[in-house]
Amino acid sequence: MITIERIKNIAEDIIADDGWVNDSHTQSEHTGIKAGLYALIHHLEETEEEVANG
Image (cartoon, rainbow, N blue to C red):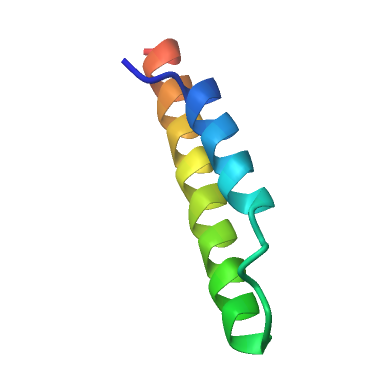
């Protein structure tokens, strides 16, 4: 099973990889990717808390 911490580390690597961003269009794509990854992590953390609290 993949842990939330592992997903966070992978997301950080993806977010940090901005070498392909070279104009406003790719900057917008990168911003969208970051937003999606942050939303995924937030949802996983909330779900984990709900399971822990029963």
